[in-house]
Image (cartoon, rainbow over all chains, first blue to last red; front, side):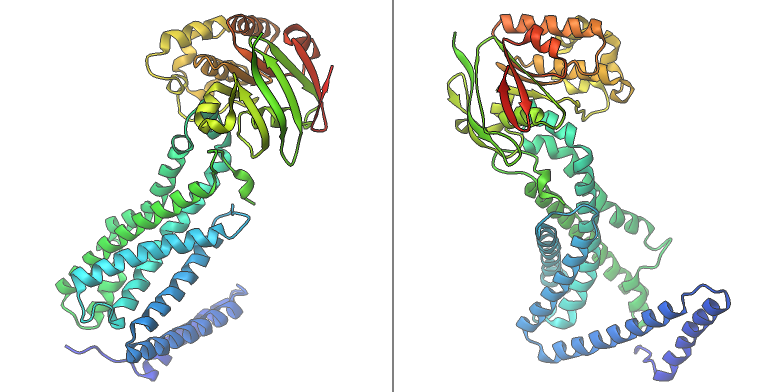
Length: 263
Length: 201
């Protein structure tokens, strides 16, 4: 079964729904019509642009170009991770922590999947590597930013407790452990929810996409299961990395709690 | 008498430089306005904030000792006590219950407080339990930041008696207090902190 290709007319008919939203906004004085129009235009432009970029990278079929694109995606994700928490480091640590945790988790899980499960020839074929890295990035970004936000938020609140433990001769590692644990837990919750709800509350995106593209549902389900495992592994790695890196950046060679490094 | 605590050129970007020499079993009391740097001084000795300068404890320089070990020997008890578990007893090492109960009792605390949630304790109760927590480890030097700040008169008398007893057995105390009379009662040396500088009284 071949995928059903969309014509410009098909899309134009769907676009009329945006007009409906805008009309609703004008009629109900929601004052959203401008934002709706801008968001819709942005969405179309961004997606068309990425479509061309992907087509270009696919025809190049050059590992360096693939790697470059993935690195750019990781950098954009790192910026999101860095911007999310209310409390931030004074220097560029937020961005560095975001980049390392998101990049590490994405590379490890993507390469594992490409070399052991999906196994395209060659394994770094951009048709597979880029979409896979993209899906993993989206999830990993979420868990890294939740973990970082949780850690940086609680560390100031728990200052008296942490310093009481340090004062009694405990190591920084012991004193900070409960906060690191909570931060990792926070980062893992979304993927646990996602796995529990998969197939009952939601039909996950990849599976739906593949069914629409004509794949047998059971084959699509297999892909989705593989992906969920990858996402949970990626979430765990990025939550772990983000929490430990943040904890490490908040101490020094004398095992002090260095809140002066936060804004 | 042997010198227990020796401080030379101790400073940070906010306070100092400080010089101090304290004999074993004695107490130096520091008074001074809020924000003058009293707590900062204690925290610098405990190495909780970035600082420069030298501190010796019974002849051993701070840099030669790992930070956790240093802090367990020169133990800082903050004016605002910190708690990390739900129940009081969880903040003490296992099998130390009878010792905790004995010391807590001497400070006028009911024994059933040990099993209470920390959230139910008053500020004064928490303050005394934080002191018990530090005393149980018998550090040679205690850095006490307003240990009797939130306490009633009777409890102050109990705390001071216990501190005197500890000094008699060789514990050295650096005490920050708002009460000049307490400084008079306990301090063998008395200082006033003014804008990050120590003045001898």
